[in-house]
Image 1 (cartoon, rainbow, N blue to C red):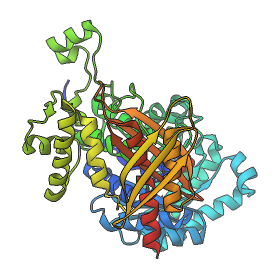
Image 2 (tube, helix red, strand yellow):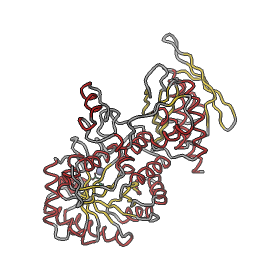
Image 3 (cartoon, rainbow, N blue to C red):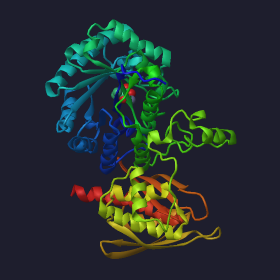
Length: 511
Ligand code: KIV
Ligand code: ZN
C-alpha cells in the first residue's frame, strides 16, 4: 500500500455531549461531561459541541464549564435561529479559546409547513438575518439546514448561498431523520458544490442519523463527494437509532485512506479509552459485535481464523487492535501485581489520575484481588470510574441485611451513615432489592422514580463482580448510579445510593 501526500483534511465535529446526550438514557451530569470533554481533547477532535444552551440551566452551565477548560478544539453551542437563543449560546461559549455558534432552522417542506408554520421566503430571511446576528457576536458561525436531505434542491442552494454571504463559515446539511441513502446523499453534496456560487468560502458539513443503519455509509459517501466536516458521536449514541459513530467513520477513513484520499487529525489510539469513558458515564453499553469498539470487534473465535491471524495478522485483520488503543497482549493482574503494573494498565485504559487517587484505587484493587483470582479490565474500569467521577458521598452504606425467600414478603434493613450519624430503616417490598431501595428513600426523604435498573456480571466465573446501574428521575432531573460488588444486592444498593448522592450533591450546591 503506497502512501500519498495529497490527502484532504476532514474535520471531526463531535456532538456526543449535545446530540448524543439528548437521547434518552444518555443524560450526563456536569462532572461526566467534563470527563468526556477531556477525552475528546486527547482524541484531538476539531470541534466539541458541548450542548444546547437554551435547553436548560444545566446545559448552559456545562457548556460554560467545558468552554473554560478545552484548549485546542473549538467549542460549539447549539441554538435555534432566534435572537434570544443565539444570545444564550454566545453567553455559554464566549469564554472558549475557539468559540463557535451553531445555529439552525428547518428547510424541508414538511418541517416548514407543519413545525415552523412559515413560508420558505420567511425561513430564508430568518436564516440569513440570524447568521448575521450571530456573526456580530462570534467569528465562527456554523449554520444547519435541519432536515436538509428532505429539502428541495433550489431552496437548499438559495439558503446555503445566503448564509455563506451572511458570514457562515461552515454549512451543515443534515440527514435529520435518517432517510438518506449513500448514493443520493453523496449526490446532494456534489450538487451543492456545483450549484452554490460562493461555496468555496465555507466548509460543508454532514450530520447523519442512523434510522436505517446507514449513518456511517452516508457520511462516507458525502466525504467522498467533497464534504469537509463530519459530525458524529462516540459509540454512535444519539436521538432514536443514534448518530454517525465517530470510531466508525474515523477508522474507515484511516483504514481506507487511499480510497478516500482524506484523513482526519484524530489520534486513533485514544478511541478505545474514549469509548469506554462514554459507556461508563452514560451506562449505555455498546453491543458486543459493534464495529471498532464492541467486545468482539477484534476477537477471532473460529479456529481457521485464529490459525491465519497467528501466521500473519493481515490474513483476517484489516486494522490492529493497537491502532484504537486496545492492547493485544494484556498482562494478567492479580494479588501479586505491583503498583507499577497496575498504574500502567490504568493509563492504557485511559485513566489519568493523580498519585493520591492511584493510591486509593490501588488499595481497592488489592482488596478485590484478595477476593478474586484475576482482576480484569472491566473490574479496573469499574473501580477507576467511580474514583474519577468523584461522586461526593453525602451518605454511605454502613450495613444491610435482607430476608428473602419465595414464602415471605422480602424485608430489607438498611443502615446508612449520614455525616457521621447512623440511621436505620426497615422496609418490605416484592423483592429484596426493591425493599432496600425503599428503605434508602425513606431514610433520605427523597421520592424518585426508578427508570432503569440493570445487573451485569462484569467478568465470568463464580467470583465474578457484578455491576448494577440505575437511572432515577426526580421531576425533570435524571441521575445515574453504579455499584460494583461480588454480591448482587450490595451492588444494587451502592448503585442506588450513588444516584441519590449525586442528587443530594446537586441540591447542596444549589443552596
Ligand atoms: O439532526 C439534526 O438535524 C441536528 C441539527 C440541529 C444539526 O441535530
Ligand atoms: Zn442530529
